[in-house]
Amino acid sequence: MNRRPSITRRLTLLFVSASSAVLLALGVVIAASVEKHFEEQDMDALMGKMALAQHTLEQLKSQDDLKRITQLLDNSLVGHQGLEVIVFEPNHEVIFATPNANFPIDLVAASAARNPYRSITWAQGEQNYRGIAAELPTGLLTRTGARSKVIVAVATDIAHHQAFMRSFLQTLWFFVAGAAALTGFLGWAAARRGLAPLRAMREQTQGVTAQQLSYRLPVESAPVELAELAQSLNEMLARLEEAFHRLSDFSSDIAHELRTPVSNLMTQTQVALSRARSADQYCSILESNAEEFEHMARMISDMLLLAKAENSLVVPTRQTVNLAAEVLALFEYYDAVAEEKGLHLALEGDGEVSADRLMLRRALGNLLSNAVRHSAANTTVRVRLSASPNMVSICMENTGDAIPQEYWERVFDRFFRVDPSRQRSSEGTGLGLAITKSIVNAHGGTISVASTGAVTTFTIRLPRVP
Image (cartoon, rainbow, N blue to C red; front, side, top):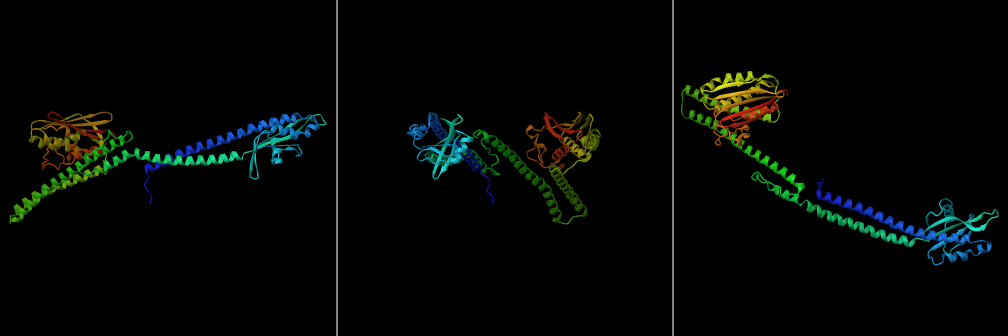
């Protein structure tokens, strides 16, 4: 089973890796610098001795001087411990060598020919040397009159340098390892401390329950990096709280809406069964029961439609719809009800839209039914149609009880009623405006409501071309 990744562990590994890489690179640079310093120090000494040897060789004027070369070179090189010199002719015949000189003649000769004065290193047994070689002229003349030449090699024992470097590198790598471990611990501590606000936020969110959705995370005290996260979580909690309250209200409303018809059905049935009755009385009771069943069936059908619309399962069958014709047809349907209340139905404007005719008629019918039901007697229900190049607007206004502004968004919720008592109306299911909004949303439009004084206006905006 894979362990979940830890931010603290990742940051610690990042600190260790970064610090180890930096310290390792620094150690390599330091070691290379020290090694280079030793090499330059050795080369300075070797070049100095090579210059002395060259000067001595140039002083040779006769064979007698050549016989005294050992003494001359010994005098030049006196006082330089660990320094070895060898002088030999091109045929590898040794002319002079210090007592402990141990040179690979072939290597020295090749270096003198190809790379004079260039540093070379070699090992002889347990000894390690660094040296230089060059072909130098002497003061003696050959039969042709040219100055004779010999090969001179100067070397120094570098064992003490290597011993120092081994000790230095051992100390350096120990320091690098210790520094990396210390940096890892400090990185872990810093990561733990830096993530403390995140752990505090986790502990705070663990206290959020269905009964405490009103709790909000403190944004002001959160670090800058977590402030946006805390704000986002607070917004999510606000949405959850609102959704939870709406769900709670919906459950209460649906229970209330279903309890009334079920209670009526039970009461009427119990009364009918309490004693024998005539056929007409039974027919009357059954007719009343049928009305309650019809109301419940309509409510269930509306809830199924809403569920499909909210899950994008309602796909409009679009066609060109003349809005004025649809509104006039609805006026004719509601004319009798409007006439009873002394209402005047008025239409202004015209427009066409690509929409599902039956769905749009239902949405407009719900708005008109709502307007007629809530209009004051002897007023006008007015429908205004207007069109722009891209949108069509449908405004339906009526005069009656105003809707408080705090309820403008909630009037489209299921079973929501402005009246806090939420008494059941026999004329509807309480789902009309919710269905209207779902139909408008399915067509890619918007719907809103506003009340100014006693005038309430519902506005639908639909795209002319989807």
